Structures are given as C-alpha cells and as structure tokens.
Picture (spheres, rainbow, N blue to C red):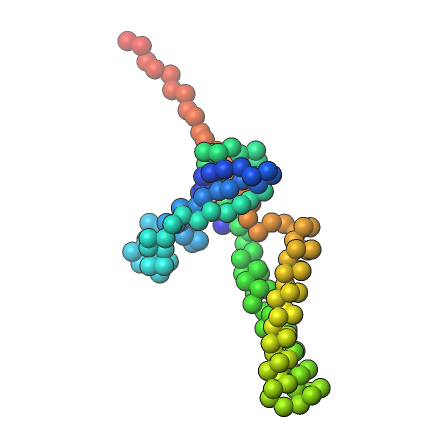
Length: 152
C-alpha cells in the first residue's frame, strides 16, 4: 500500500474532500527531492484535492492517510489506455476489411476510438460499484504519552 498524508477540507455527503500536499511523492523518499524527477514536475504545483468515500468518519481538519493499493494506479492506467487503443485497432481493421481503402480504415479507427472511450466510461460506471476503491483513507493515529513528573 502506498500512503500519503492529507487533510480533510470538507464533507460532501458520504464523501470527504481531502487535500494532499503537492510536495508528496509516490515513492515516499521526499528527503531526496533534489535528486527526484517528480520535484521538477511538482514545482509550484497547487495541492491536489480528491473526493474519497468517508468510511472512517473523518471531519474537516482531521489528518488522514490516503492509501492506494499496490498496482492500483498501474491497472487503472493500463485499462484507460489499452481499451481505447485496442478498440481503435479493431475499428480500423473492420473498416479496411469491410469497405477497403484508407478512408474506410480512418473512419473505422475514429469510430473504434470513440467506442473504446464510451465502453471505458460504461465499464467504469457499472463495474466500479462492486470493486475496491482506488483511493481509500484512514485516520492518522496520534500517540499521546503521559509522563509522570518528578516532584522535588
């Protein structure tokens, strides 16, 4: 599990709007920011906000940890890129086979690409309900230590 600290900024029904500082890095090695390529990309970037289902009862101002399952981002990115491209290739092959010519192939590629995006949108809306969420959160634990003072 990859974790990033965040702060709950607002509540919206069953969801909490959390703000993750832009300086956080996915690898967790922020102490080495001078040698990190993401520091160049994050320079001056505003904090990122995400809407996450509030399963822990967090309130505005609470510090939480936003967690991403191992491989979750990779799977989502692979599906998001692969499905439209595969549909475009199938559409191009179908256009070329059925009608022949470059124009039919181009129309098939465009139609396949559009169909891939529609299919991806449909898949995300229907299947995501039963899946584990990509982002989840948990409350940060605070350790309070009580030290007995010596009386002299």
